[in-house]
Length: 92
Image (tube, rainbow, N blue to C red; front, side, top):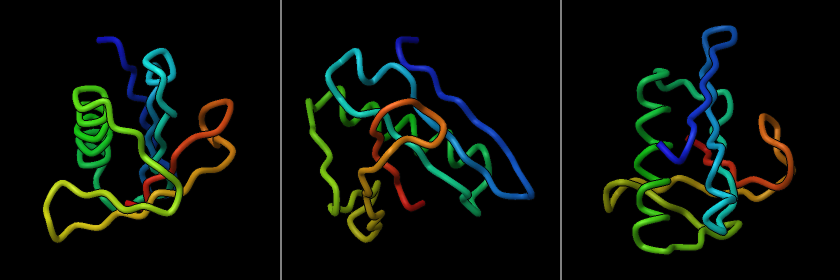
């Protein structure tokens, strides 16, 4: 329980963010205005956070990531919306 996963729903869209990755030396992650369910947003945040921490992986602006070989989710580094500072936005 070192990482907090914040979730919100607004106008039928779902967003989520991490809080605590910074303590491990990584950028916080956000998913904004997703059409996926709130459960899918939470699962994606959990799986990507786990991957980053377990593998000591640094995600970079402009790269893609996915849970399968075919999934390509764009990563954008910019000012945080739900979290202070700079975050990585997953276009999910």
